[in-house]
Image (cartoon, rainbow over all chains, first blue to last red; front, side, top):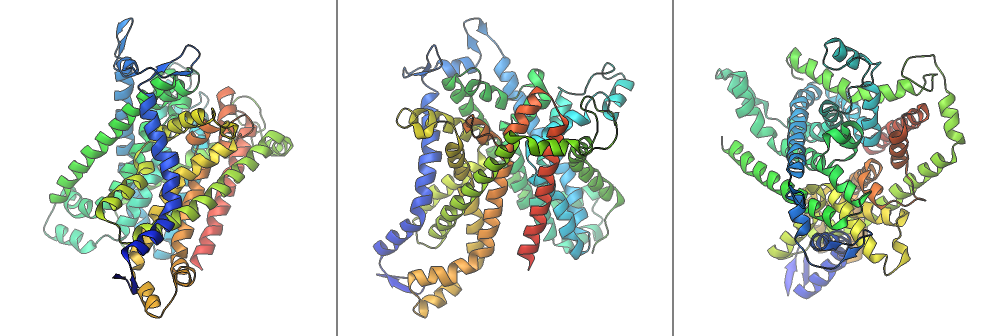
Length: 298
Length: 262
């Protein structure tokens, strides 16, 4: 017998009731999330049949191929795509953070009644489907539009060509889609900021940089971390943006996976790339976690 | 109210302009009278009236709505119970860690991996039953799967901030388990549940990847339709459709704000 907040009951009774609450949800997640994940791992080790069907022969071939070993010798293609994906994800996250800080501080500097209005202004694009916000850049970067005109005037591109497909277009798409994902959690941290610490730092003649790194950054780290995860993870696997704005010139790992499950119909190879993407995402998050702890100590 | 540096204001304005540039471009070209090219040829509402005659689009809109509503309802119920079960019972440390890891999977793993694993599993399940042919049913399952975790996380944080005192008081006053749930826990949790449901609904409307991987020929949703059209060529009808979607979003947000603030 034990007392569990105000109720005299038994361990077994509690466990049974608790399972009643947890059961359906956990069962769902086990069947449609954990199990498929395990199956994906399994499939990454089997062979693709001639018509794209699964042949249950154990092999490391998919991973070897991903590492660049093929019948034609070694290629760095997949490494380049992987590296590019990590790079794009890091840079997009960084740009989102750089733009989010002023935005969050700006909203917090508004009178309390007007903040809702400004927040709504951030939420509208946040709620708009990303396909719309991605293809819109096809219009903005079109040859007749000012940006492309300017670029061709500066001789960056030949006249009458669009600014897509290009790395630039991919970044535009990524940042405009994911900016609110950092701004919103960061805003909730900035709103609770203890300004006395900032003022104390200023009173002690701290430079602007030091005020930011030592009085503001540690206080806003919880919101920042949520924001960074919410941007970094989806940008790593993104395929709509590179597909529409990057073309075949600027492929990311998301396109690679989609190709295997779509046109190429090579599920085992697709599964192997997915595993690589997952490991890479996990490693990056782990690295960030370590770094961010250091920031807290300072 | 605090004063901030003009440079901060300028950068904030730049960021907002950056967010709205795409929406603005789509809106402007949706009322442009020319079918080809991007030069301004005068104002027209033709593309909007053409939309309403397009049965494919109406069907896609219907599918989007069914998918979002059904998956949100199921995910909110499952997620809420999951959160209560997680927070209100004395699980051992190992069980708690395990549940925590499972709940965070959809947050820390790119959605394309979930989509890929669902494709494979549905492909294998199809050998057993034809229910798992690509289509709306599969899409609903996929959406619920990532929504549950988000709902549970939102509701759980509300549970934690509520504390257990009120429930304990109810228990002391001899409330039965079901009475406690109906009259105390759920009413107190309602703002959290609403927030979770809203989040789930948004995620469903915003999703493209899971739908793209699990959709069948009869279950085209609006994002899938727009994507397919854009891949062929960008047309003013699509701009009109996108603009309507944005406007509906705005109305939805204003409505929800009114609802939650009173």
